[in-house]
Image (tube, rainbow, N blue to C red; front, top):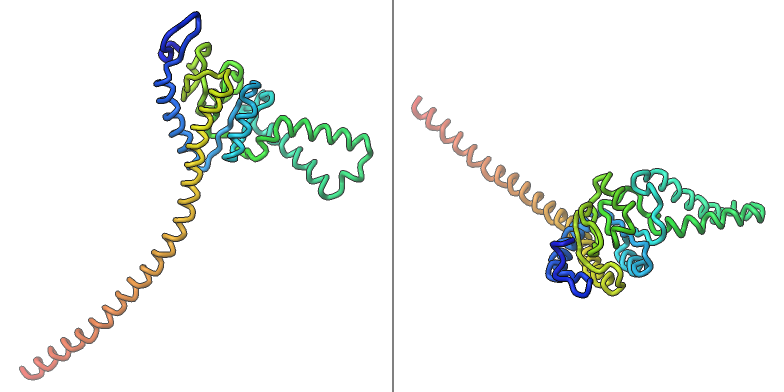
Length: 253
């Protein structure tokens, strides 16, 4: 992290905020592009200071997040994780169709506990039907397993990296204090605002596309009519020319 450190004072490294600002803008632009393309970004932060901030910000832009223990193999063994999510959905279906009411008291208790456990661990990624296009991590030391899995699968990693961490395995480094909740909130505000803009632009493009197609159709129809009319106008002229040629031939004869 030496290139991002401004100075050291009383054994404390001070980050160069100009470099932080530049890196935040770079990361925000890349994440905006991902959001605009309709892909998902998985937010990961299991440390106490970041949990609530991540949950609030990720939920506001409808992105998946992990704030409890990172389930090992979540990315590298994604099909198994999806099976667990489907198990949660099947329990919900049992509750709705009345099957749950026919079970014994003990079975109900066991299933309810299983559902609560799954909800706590995987509830926030229930809508993640495929691997995310990127990871946003707070504290790469604590979330090293998540970073390692993303690296193995070639998934880009965006991360807040403190001076005690190694940024080697991070694609988009944001040098910042990852222990202060205020610092985390400021960075996430900027990043999530950019992603929200990307999502809005995507919606606008979807609305504009049918309108543009609707305008092109009448124009094409008009063009077709013009061509037909032009042919109709040219036809008599051709007939007159043919008649004149016939008369001239007869006169010469």
